[in-house]
Amino acid sequence: MMEGVKCHLDSSLPRLRRLGMVVAEAISSRLSTEGPVLKFEYEDDDETRELKSLLVQTPSLCVVPSLPDDE
Image (cartoon, helix red, strand yellow):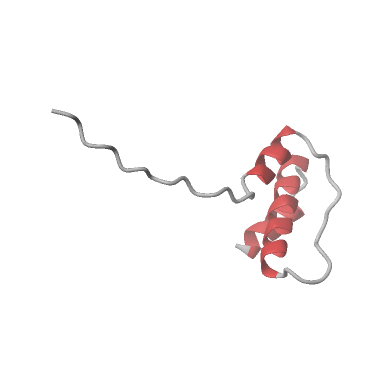
């Protein structure tokens, strides 16, 4: 995985490089919860906001059993 992030960070294509930055920040924040946070400078556009929204954990939905039918 880290090799893939490195390839993205080394890319000459800004969009691909920005994706690598977002992923590197996410991995870094999960691996090291203490200390300084890895933070790159990049344009925070719709695509980056959408990618970052995928990193936010939401509570799982509760499954409510259905009630028996009145027959």
